[in-house]
Image (cartoon, chains in turn green, yellow, cyan, brown):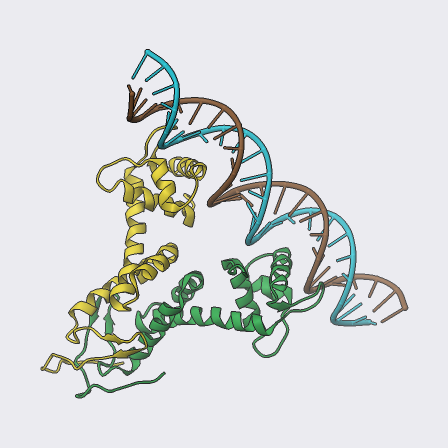
Length: 156
Length: 156
DNA sequence: ATAAAATGTTTTGTGCGCCTAACTTTAGCT
DNA sequence: AGCTAAAGTTAGGCGCACAAAACATTTTAT
């Protein structure tokens, strides 16, 4: 029914989510600022999001997320964070780059892959291995395990 | 100078690359087929790629990659494969899904992250761990290490 | 060799996402 | 209140990527 959100609209939704994090309402100006677009583009996007019931919005009024919008936004954020964290914590990529790439890839991330990336990042902190370490950005060093018996870490 | 290729043009280039893998020349029909677009779209794309010196193309003629085009196409393929392999071999995601997601994400993949994903996938085959195994799609099992002699490890 | 089929191209139009310029509304003074 | 600055919107336009329909060329099969 509801056609999937475009990457662009997902970006707007995510931005609004961040801006309204503490119960605040978002100004179009700030959305434009964050996404590096001009004000008119924001107006159009807000209309589209409003039409899908994702944001509460009326002309000249500020914006908040609807329940539905919040759910959607959280999902987008989850995808974003799963990627970003994986890049930073597991692949040990520079923050800036991780953020930029996550930002573009998040739109394509499937639930299954998101879950596994997250799980994987968690493993890297808990595995008896102590986590593999990159050497000099060029190779992999797999240190000897610190634990003797594998730990059962079953968390869900 | 040369503005980066759009995702769309990257897709066309990649398709041509695959179709001309064995020295063959590509027919527009097949490109359209592979990318699930109509013939007119292919014509337009070929013009754009030709204008950038990436393909050898003249109206009503078949297509081959130029040296420059081959280089670019290989780069795209590398990104695609890095993602696909990582998804399949490390995250143990289903082939079809891995392919689909890789297809969309490949356009955003940075060189550094590509290298690390590749490195990582390699590790999963070589690490003394023998590679972690997913259990039931829900969790991670980190099997007991096979290595005996403790190696010097400096942990952060 | 030639007609039919396949392939390729042009024309025209759509949707999306963004822009600038100009206009309207709201908010913040004093 | 009244005026200005800031924020928001409308109008008009552009580029990209795609499509359907109609036209052109090449291939093929007889």
